[in-house]
Each structure stands twice: as structure tokens, then as C-alpha cells.
Image 1 (cartoon, rainbow, N blue to C red):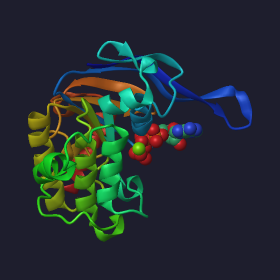
Image 2 (image 1 turned 180 degrees about the vertical axis):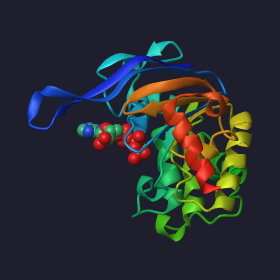
Image 3 (image 1 turned 180 degrees about the horizontal axis):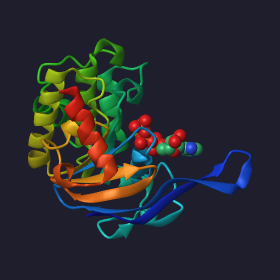
Image 4 (image 1 turned 30 degrees about the vertical axis):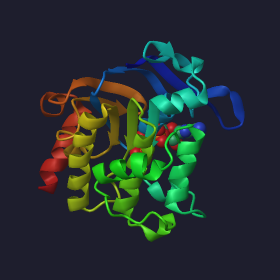
Length: 252
Ligand SMILES: Nc1ncnc2c1ncn2[C@@H]1O[C@H](COP(=O)(O)OP(=O)(O)OP(=O)(O)O)[C@@H](O)[C@H]1O
Ligand SMILES: [Mg+2]
């Protein structure tokens, strides 16, 4: 359903317009229906750049990005948003801090022309909030009145509202405590089944992936060093993966 074929992103290198800096280089993967892919790599390895390329926020310099067989460049912004949604590391930044969270939700419904019933809050919004574990939450408050974990779930609810085919989660666990993380991971797996979406889970924490994804793409300095089923994390002899594994051993 999502396919990246030899995708690279270059940017001009500061003052030297003609000199290019390669941010990601020759990335290829597929993401099928209801599949979950983990992208793992050190800080600066290009994970968010891949996400931004799929979201159409960063233009790729070469290669193809296809969704349901159609080139990403042939989608309008609205069409693309209906297919791919993102949940970022800092949900505070993705909600407008000047309006209540309820207003933010209603704006999404309006923009995507999804207000078909008289009471979309009850028919559309509350069932989703219940599914993300926020059944009784009062949305008539501004984003700063919610905890990080609540805002993270609210971002997932807002993404689900559009009924996307793909959700990209970019280091969503990094601000959460262990219990909230586990709750979020369980929620994600249940939601994937119920709402039939695929997701890309971006992280630099090797420990979170086995419970979350079916396959992984390992990045190092913008290049994919490995791509395959999740058990690659255990079996790969790639020096970078070995280093990640050794780091976990040292922590235990
Ligand atoms: N528009 C840009 N212009 C110049 N350099 C960029 C641009 N976008 C990204 N980079 C650089 O490309 C590299 C990859 O950035 P990216 O944000 O994709 O990394 P990441 O793997 O998501 O890192 P992190 O784990 O810290 O979030 C970084 O060195 C970054 O500074
Ligand atoms: Mg990033």
C-alpha cells in the first residue's frame, strides 16, 4: 500500500547552493495493509526525514513514493492527509495553544468535511476517545491543561478521526513514563485491528520495537543498513545493531 523505491533527499549545503548534502540515501521499503514497520537509528540518521518525505512535507530528490500504487506527487494535500497522518514526539506543539482541544478537533472535522450528523462530537469523536482510553475527558480546555500522555492519546484520536490508512508515530514514547508507554503500546495494537490502519513507528529505542512492529528498517547516516522481519533485531550481525544490542545488555 505504501511503497518507497530508492528514495533520496538532498538539501543544498549552506552557502554552496550547488553542493548537496545527502540526508537520506536510496531508501526502499513497503508497508502493507495493517502492517507495522519500525524505523530505528541514531539521532540524526534520517528517521524524521523519511516521515516528512512520506507526509509530503519534505520533497524527495530522487526515487518514488507510492500510496496504493499512485505517486505521492499526484495527491492533493487533502487527499494525502486522508491517507497519512502523523503523531509527533511533542504533542503540545501539534495542538493550537490558543484554542480548546475540542475546537481543534472540530476544525479537523470541518476541514475534511466530515460533519454529516447533527452531533459529530457524540457520533464521531467520543467513540474514538473511548477507544484511545480517554472516555471521560473534558475537552473544553486548552492543550496546556492536559498531561503529556493525555495529549499523546488526543493526537492519536485526532489522527484516527480522518480514518487514515497509515499513521506515522515519531518517537511518541520518549516523553512518557514506563506505565503510560505500556498502556500506549497496548492501545496502538488494539487500534490497528479495530481501525484497520498500518503504522510506521520511529524510535531510537530498540527495546520498544518487538511488542509494536512486524518488521524493521535500520538506518545509519541516512542509509538503510538492514530491512526485514522483527527478528532481525536478534539475529543481525550488522555492527550497528550489535552495538544497540550490547547497549541494552550494559543497561540491564
Ligand atoms: N532541511 C534540512 N537542511 C539541512 N539539514 C537537514 C535538513 N533536514 C534534516 N537535516 C539533517 O539531516 C539529518 C537527519 O535529520 P532527521 O531529523 O531526519 O534525523 P532523525 O533520525 O529523525 O534524528 P532524531 O532521532 O534526533 O529525531 C540531521 O543531521 C539533520 O540536521
Ligand atoms: Mg527525528
